[in-house]
Image (cartoon, rainbow over the protein chains, first blue to last red):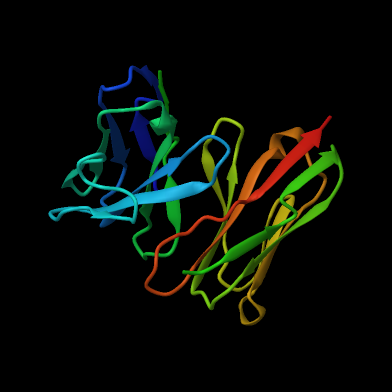
Length: 114
Length: 108
């Protein structure tokens, strides 16, 4: 299994500003994933982040809006840029286990944009 | 991509009742996970079960991959079981795709 922490756990931000969310894993992992969960909705994959390469974004998500860093095998950041109220969501990072079977999720970052 | 249908979409139980949640998926998979998202938003791994049956306390799960469905059994439900249950099948070479889940409410 993997133990994942996220910072901040929640934040309230003003529109037009940016927030960087950190994800830390207790072991080295190849792939890290970022998800968004809008209020009352299911989870949607934003992007996959591999260490040493550009993140791969899903349809509907762009790097200018959601830049991702992956400086090493235990850490990643997701920035939500130029925020609007529509960005109010829970943002979750996840990782695969070493065998590539199970995925584990961090506790999430609850973002409210006013 | 793979389609996931979970039923029922909503379920209300009295504490102590048993329930079965069902997940149908549209394509063959080499991985399937059940998650519980608690009311605080945290996703908790329940089972990794691409096939067969597993049990963990009051919960058990069965996946019949050849018939493309999985079942989650909850016995003697407790209020702490409330939340959303997601079945997430993973086709080979693909990434997790979440369906709408089953919203479970257990009343005292």
